[in-house]
Image (tube, rainbow, N blue to C red; front, top):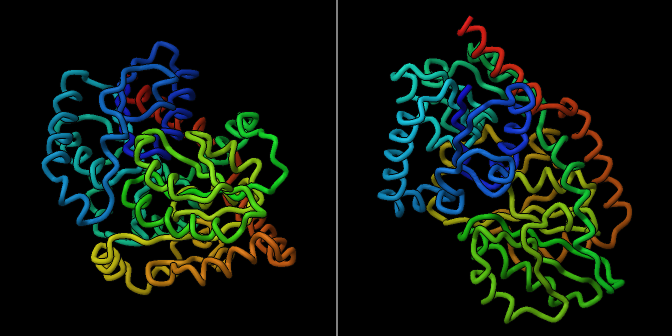
Length: 375
């Protein structure tokens, strides 16, 4: 059978690769075209567009690149029609993917969405179109079950969180982080987008300058281009270094971490690394986003959202300043009681995530759905 898979971000690339492997185990002759990154490319198939060209975030950022976004949508539709897939699989990335799903439904394609948009946070109105356009939705956060049941979406299925499979799989690559330095490692993960790097990395590096007793290692991403990190590195203190595309290797050896909000907060928790969550985006985009979300969502990090309580400290926008980050860093790095309380919270989160096998369950349901139609 023929599968067309669309992932637009680094986390989608990781989970898309594992889903591709699971599909190929059930359908060894599968033909796959995809939008994704290096992880998906390592599995096989044909890459149509790389995620390095797709990572726009926020209202203003998307508007500034509108011509590129519209061009990508047109390219995607044309490529799908030329390929003629038995199934289109969308991995998160809702601003783009739901537009394609609407068009594809009208064209008669089978639509399967893996990793739900965060409708419970904002843009709940999308659910009407998703109910119409998607043959199935596979969601990964346990608290989403109540949301989809309350909003009459019977084709929504909880499959568990794919990070429970990905973390042990990728942590085995940790030998790349070894070095003759006895200082504890502090992981700096400033995000996978250019705006996040610009807003988060400088303040993280100022904390590093205060603490020569630690080795601060930036988890860089080559998809951003190594040259984007150079202006920060040349001004950094001697206890700062960078590795590229080795986030899990870094986390497997980290004593503590400063993290840009996103999937990395949950990844860090699954490695049992105490962390502080940081986020500072375009101020206007943030104001608009908060207006949409209102008071319904109390947290920004996945760890706190899943636990429904503040396991992590979240420093957002104006709250992300050097004094507050310094105070929180000292807690996660040096206060053993504080660190233990956070690790106990991680255990609670892990127990809520539904066990391993998310990619296998999702692939099994997709293949079964297609075969049922064919028979």
